[in-house]
Image: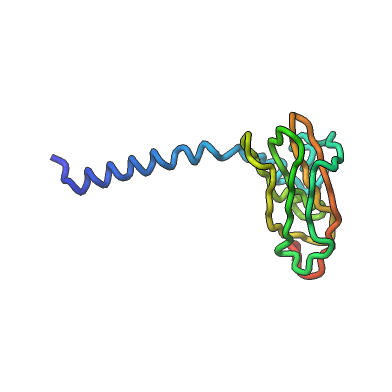
Length: 149
């Protein structure tokens, strides 16, 4: 006969595993080549957005001057219907693709993130909506620090 403590521990472990399994299903596959790209154009090609069109329906809020390049606050909002994914690219970073957000249907297409920038550069927000790619960009100047040193 199995001791009561061992049975309770086994039951608890099985219940915990059952609860955590659906969370694993929410994570999308990581696009390794895009995140490992060393140039912005390479990252953009890796996500399939080489033909992205600039749009005033993609709203990018980034500072004109970032006093601390270790915490640059970026906000992206898509006014495009059927927004699926939002990417944030800092063009002169050692690895330019800094964030990817996969959105479920019905979710408000707004994201905010703090990124680290190597130096002054364009920040680009790319949105996939309705199977097409759109972008907005803004130059941000950094004055202190940076992810390159």
